[in-house]
Length: 254
Image (tube, rainbow, N blue to C red; front, side, top):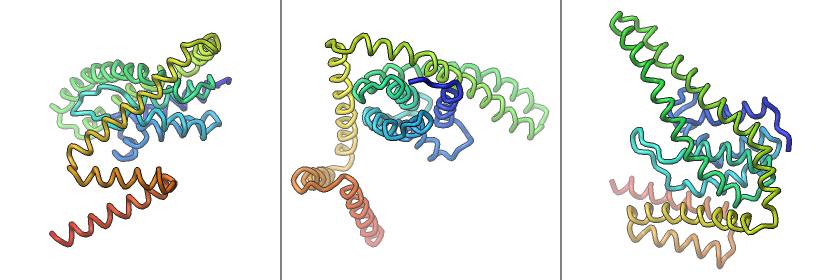
C-alpha cells in the first residue's frame, strides 16, 4: 500500500495530540487518544481502512491494559505503539498478531522521544525563570506553553511521519520475504501471548483491590459469554447497569 507524505504527517499529529502534557485537548480526551484502540481507528481513517485500524488498535490495546505511568516515569509508550504499529500493519497488510509483536519494541522507543522532550524543555524553563524575574505574566504564560509545544510537535510528529513513510517499504519487503517461514508463525504466536499477558496483569490489579466480589462479576461475565452466548456489547451494557445500581446503593447507605 502506498502512503502519501500528508498521511504520514497526519499520523504523526495523532501521536502528538495524544502524548502526555499536550494542552490542546482535555486530559480525558488526550488520554483516550493515547490508547491504541482510539489512535488505531484514527490511523485507519487516515489510511482509508478504519475497520482494520480498529482491529489492529484493539489487539495492541489489550497489551497495555495494565499500563500505569507514575509521576514522570514512563515504561512504554502505548500511543506510539498504537499509531506506528497500526500504520505499519495496514500498509504492509500484516495480521493483528504480527502487528502486536511489532508494536511492543516500537513503544519502547517512545521513552527516547520523551527523554529528548524533557531534556529540551530544560532550556525553555531557564528562559522562563529569567522572564519571571521581570514579572511579565503574559510572557511567562507564552513561554510555558508555545515554545515547549512547538518543540514537542517537531520531535513527536516528524520522526513518526518519517518512520511510517519510509519504513513502510522496509516492513512490507521484510514480511514478504518471511512469508511461509516459521518466523511469521513465531511472531504471530508472540503477538497472541502479549495480549493475554496484558489481560492477566489487568485482572491481577482488579482482583487484588476489589476482593472476592470481583471474582463473582468475572464469573458472571464468563457464564454470559460462554454458556449463554450473549454478545460482548450486551454484556458491557449489563455491566454498566450493575455498576450504576451498586453506586446508587452505596450512595443511599452513605
